[in-house]
Length: 571
Image (cartoon, rainbow, N blue to C red):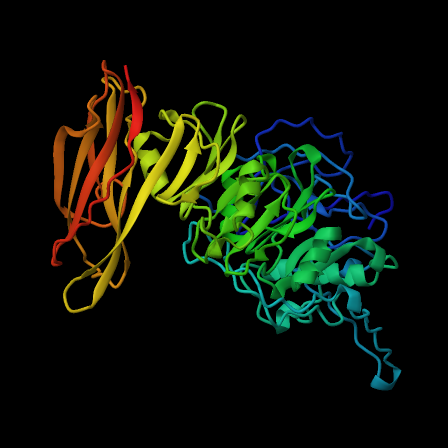
């Protein structure tokens, strides 16, 4: 190479199957870089560096978004940040051989015609290039047994290639292109890499392994990928198994994230992200998809702080700086929850092992509520609601069904103010506007030839309907739940009748009796039998509901759930 010539090279992912978009947050322009090549967004990988040339360990942030249900925008803004040992650059140059081997400057150049040779005994053989083996500390570890599992859903998986379980560094790599003697001439090149990629990678291996500063350089190539992976991301990749890991081969060098907050390297099956505060961690599959929906590191979750964590029930979670993503099973989409009172409450009721808890896994992201104050998260078997004036409490089962029918926190009940507790008559839960109370009665009945069927008849206390109720109405429900040994297609005739306590101290019917002749078991719309009547212009009245549950196919019995009386303001 001519004296005085400066070469600056950078590795980028021309063959990346999955690359991370950047956020749309504007960042200041980077400081000017003096170079012999113009800055473009079409950077190509450099084959190698000598010890005296600039370090191309990172590439511009212009990348294509990964597969996800919500594609975040991309940015072409790159801001340089200090990176240990392997300083990124955003100035791409075309690859060219570097070093004294000028005869290999063009791979396609034909060899010149050779003059006649002297007799064999006078011939001096050319020196053989020998490159030291890759140091043991650079060899990737064996892949762990609990590798991430790719979903079958193409919208959720980031997998595009199989791991290379037989990967090894190049033996005695060539520092220049020698036609017919490159590793690519002897071995099949895995997709999506080309012979040019493979030869550049081999040259890079040779130059790095011949360097006096190899151990301190923080760089490494993984043939046939022509990209340098650097520093902490390189170390994390090697600890996972390198090309034999679930990530497969790199498809970029170190990329500076927008705003200079950290770096990433993309691989065939997902990226590794790094920041000084969090270290380096891979994010793949459903976790990557859900993180992308929330704008990656630029969103509220920020950077990952752990790899995937396998939970006792087989699900997984991954921690981020301000929250976590949970994936219940292989093909689950995943859901995100913030660090804060809702997650704290979930953890107290089994969130650390969700599959065995009474709430189960998240089924949606934590969200803010219309009033601009509260927040909620939905789970497999309930919800947790939080407001700054009430705290965070789960609502489940029949209480949740009643609260939902009335309009959740926008109903007259408002937000929950305590946990659900059992009582002698059933169970109760306090809310801002009063409690929701459910009475439960257990019955045993012979039905068919299967022996006794155990079931519960239930009713709630009469309560004011909807907010704002115009006209104001009182309402209640009657339903039943099988407990054991009941037919799977069980049905019942369910009757509900409201009553008020008259001035003489007697209960009298109020409104119309409702009869459901084909009632399914369980609470909620479509199952229970609802009854209501006006509660307006009469002053305070004490109400109750009287029910009757008769299982179809069984002898009629005295299965009449009756609620306690409750006074309602019927002004």
